[in-house]
Length: 109
Image (cartoon, rainbow, N blue to C red):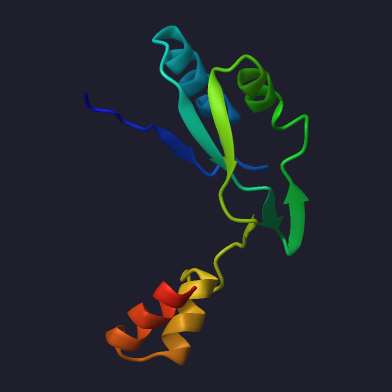
């Protein structure tokens, strides 16, 4: 028997909730359970905004009806800086110049 896990990453305060609702509806229609890996906080203009009950209503409803599973995917996504490089990668690149040290550092996280 082949088992497949479906996961939808990054539902957050600013994510496309209509897309999420449509994915839930499709999975419900075909009795396919999917995991939504949510991000509790999203940075907007330097302020963290929570994925509150209103923004997550569709996820809460689907989970209560056993159509989806919800897991936590990190804590907060911070916006990219002026360079367009994600903050963590920029920080790592500044600290570690060769790829071997970079990979070792990431594996220790």
